[in-house]
Length: 146
Image (cartoon, rainbow, N blue to C red; front, top):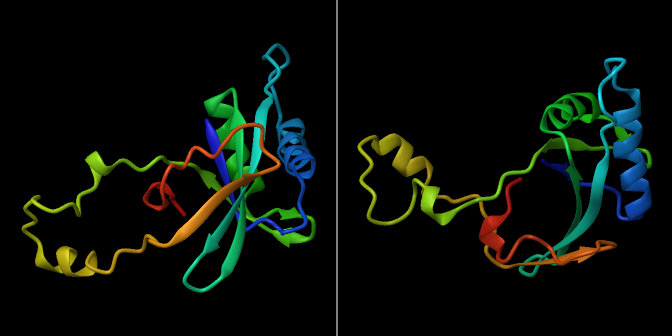
C-alpha cells in the first residue's frame, strides 16, 4: 500500500522521511508472533505549479502490509516531521475511466453537476521525484490526489 504524506518540509530528506515512517511502525503495538512490517521505499515529490510558481513537497511511502499501513496512517496523521505537522493519508491513483465528470456521462442531479464544474485538479504542474529510486508514478497532472 502507498501512503501519501502531504506538505512535508522542503528540507526533509528521503532518510528522514523513511525514519519518520519506520518510527511510526516501531511504535505500533504488534502481536508477539506477527511478522515484522517494513517500509519498502520512500519517494519525495516536488510539485511546481507553473502558473503561480508555487512549489510543494510531498512524500510517498510504500509499505508491504495494508493493515499496518492503515493503522500507521491513523497514528502519524498530524504528527511532526522536522517540526512541521503533516497530513498522512492513503494514496489513490486516479483513473480517467472512473471519473464521473467525464463528458458523455449523464448526470441527473444538477446540483452535483454544477458543483463539479470547477474541477479541483491543477492543470499546469510539473511533478518530479527527488531522492527517489525510480521515476514518479504520476505520468500527468490529472493523476494526483490531494
